Amino acid sequence: MNQIPWEHIQDKLRNPNLAEDETLSNWLIEDIENETFLGDLKVIFSITGSVPDSFKPQKEMAWQRIVNRISIKKRRFDVIGIMLRVAASFLLIALGIGGGYFLQNSKRVNSFTEVYSPYGHKTMVLLPDSSEVWLNEGTRIKYCADFTKSRNVEMTGEALFHVTKNPSSLFTVKSKDLRIEVYGTTFNVHGYENDLVSEISLVEGSVSLFRDEQLVKKMKPGEVITYDAHSKKFTSYQGNLRQITSWRSDELIIQDETFANMVKYLERWYGVEITLDKSINQNLRMSFKVKTESFIELLSIINHITPISYEINGKQVKITKRKTNKS
Image 1 (cartoon, rainbow, N blue to C red):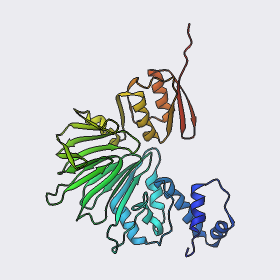
Image 2: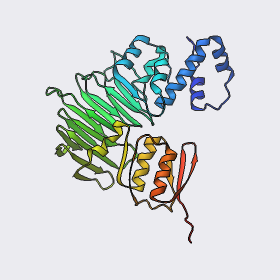
Image 3: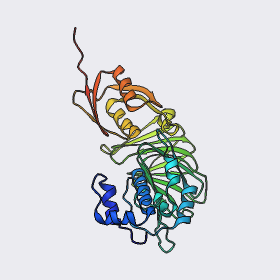
C-alpha cells in the first residue's frame, strides 16, 4: 500500500454509486489487503462523516490512543464490533484533526485532538486529566494535545461533562458565543451550530458563564441558563435535569415542547431531516418518552396526539397534517 490512489478513493467515498475507475480497480487487484483497506475506510467515513486525507500509518500509537480515549456506545446497531475490526494501520483517523482524525506531532506547537460523535450514536471521551465527556449525536469537541498546560475544550453540539477538580489548572469550555469556567462539576451544554438558542444546565458543582469575556452569572446546581443569539438575551430557571440529560441514558424525554422544537430532537435522535408542512401547528406542545421505539413507531405515537401524515424518502421526511373525515 505504498502507492495508495487517495484521490480516487476519496471520490469513491463521496460518490459510492460511481463506477470504479481503472486506476482504483487496478490497485484493488494488486493486493487482497487493498480491498479490505478500502472497505474499512468506508466504515470510518460512515462513522466520522469525513473523507480521509492521505497519511502515513502509525499502527501502535493510533490503536493505543483509540483504546485509551474513546468508546462508542451502541444504539440500534453495533458500531463497536465494526471499529474493533478496522485495521490498526489506519486507525489514526478515528481521533484528531478534520472531523475524527487523529494527528500528533511533537514539533507542532498547536497540535490538538478532535472527536466527532456521529448521528445515531453516543461517544464517551476520557480526557487526559481523567475528566469524562459524553457526546450526543452530531457533536464535536476539540482540545489541545498538551492538556496539562491548557484544559480548554471547544465544542459544538451537546455534551455532558464530568470534570476532575484541579485548583491549579482552570477547565474551560467554549461553545459558540459562550464560555464556561468550570471548578470541578457535572454539567450539560447544548449548542448545535444551527440552533439559535444555547443551553447550559448545571447538575452539580459550580460553573461561571461568560459572554464576550463578561461574566453573565455564577450558576447553582439545578439551574438552567439559555441564550438566544437572535435577541442576545439570557434566561435563567430551575430546569428538569432528568429530561435535559436523559439522552445520556439512551432515553429521549419530550416534555411540553413545541412541535417545531420536538422535530429538532427527533432529527438528531434518528439521524433524519424533517420538513414540516405549513398545515402543521408548530406551536402545538408535545410530551412523550422514547427509548427503543423505531422512527415509524414514534410517528405512530405522535399520530395519537395529533393527526399527521408523513412521507419518508431515505433520510428525508415530510410531515403534514392528516385530513380527518367529517361525519
